[in-house]
Image 1: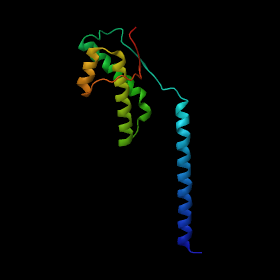
Image 2: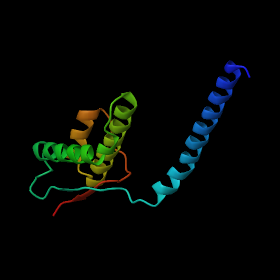
Image 3: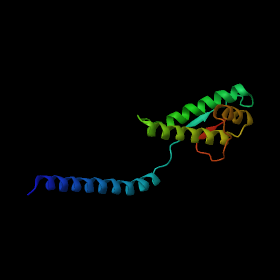
Image 4: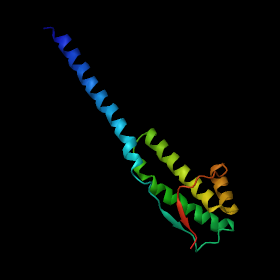
Length: 128
């Protein structure tokens, strides 16, 4: 038998096996994701006067730090990991700012990001 033909068949079979394993893993992931509750972090701000810019800036920093912790599963090397983590952090911060719904905090958010606040809450915040 030709050695070149045997090697090509072997490579083809390996490629099929890898593709099959990858395809089946994609089917399992969405089901697992549905059964797990999204993690949350409570950010307390009862010690802050968030009606002024200084208090709102301190709360923004706390929200940003909490979002970084929540998105730590996306830590990794490479541009894709960084993009996923940045998107995760941005979504959580925007959601938390929206949920607090205070103009000074929204102003801090807008000055830091250049964006306005949306209204889809994810993070848990407590004022007491």
